[in-house]
Image (tube, rainbow, N blue to C red; front, side):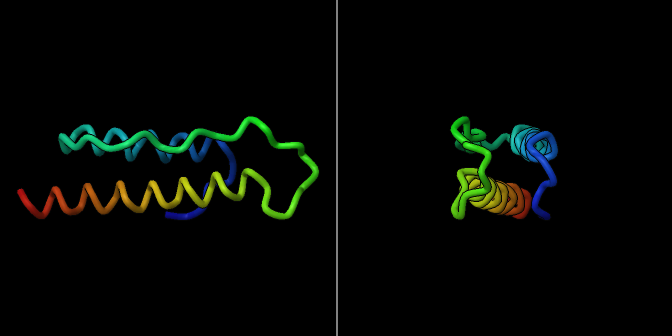
Length: 73
């Protein structure tokens, strides 16, 4: 999956994967929540960088779970 352009796009992509997990009957941990503590100064190692990295990892694992479940059917 490509990196989202903004938080709304990230939320939409996450909701799509959650819906696919639900349709597949899979239970899966909650996705990471957006940070609330960004100072807005463009820091190296910004909390948003960590959020998007964690979210991409969640997406990857969710997709793997969906694909594994569909192969087992």
